[in-house]
Image (cartoon, rainbow, N blue to C red):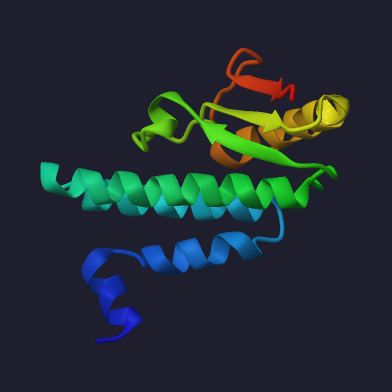
Length: 145
């Protein structure tokens, strides 16, 4: 059985989509991959049992796209942690909307740089997903030691 056989049987190659995300050249390429992933999921939504693995697949797509956008926009120097919450944190995001997320930085002195980067990431993510985000959905927190 080849990848082409799987594509014919399942209407796409989910592993190929996931492998392509870290190498996408720009937001436009990420948008195409996101659309392919969601089209694949819509074709596969045939039974309740398929929901779990399809939601996991879309979580991998969304976090991969977010990671690639982070790299493309130039991550500031400093330690940080990107966290998801709500439906995104539970890996339940099926529609193409910006994941609910926040960035926690270890050094409060880097918070301004990360806040600017985070805003650029959310704008690019909006373009890649055709989703909506509001400033209330994106939170930057500084940890005090």
